[in-house]
Length: 305
Image (tube, rainbow, N blue to C red):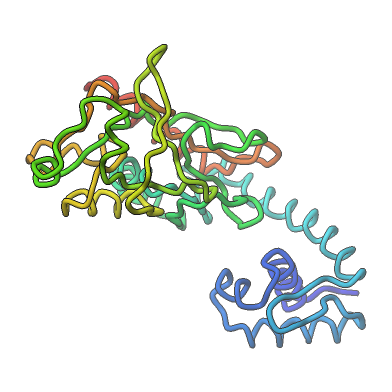
């Protein structure tokens, strides 16, 4: 079978559909309509003379023929992508698409200034950033890299620290502390309104207090549980309780007197932010350049501190 440009495009559509597991998600990833994908796939199946997928209302599953074709396409398209990526060694600046999945705290503390400089320095890179606190399979979801706390990086990934270790603190508004008083020790937190946080895995995070031999973990009776630190900080600002968050996130609010540290001697140092990517893939030049920029920014911050 001689492959035309249309055939290659439809084979890529099939591969993206198989990875996504459904027409709606594949359509979003490819920025086309679900009906256009369905039409392209039906045309491909007609030309090949075999059914590749089994359709139902919400998802698709591969036939035996589809499974066999997918395994060969992933190898073939992978070689094509590697060949195109290799050309970046001959360019003054990398090009191509770079997709990053980023923890919300990292997005706000690390990436704004860095990405602004990156897009200016490398205008031929199509950069896409998805801010998401839930843990995902970055390979399966089509991302080149992710940014998480060091202890949350999957073991089969290459991880590079891009920040200093992070200080976690407890904070509340002056109005809240005026009404409820300040806790004198960690045990007193049981008598306070504490704002819980679900981690990216869905579990509620137990507050880690102190460092070294004095370190302990506490799990108060939560007055409210949220899934992002920005909302926890907003609740604390409104006098709704004590929040546990990164000090860098709320330093301006502390300086302005809108929040006060609670039990400051029980603040805790935690893992740095790490950027991570698959160990079994060729590292895209656009990603290598971004990691270099993030590391340089980290070194500058350390030199200034």
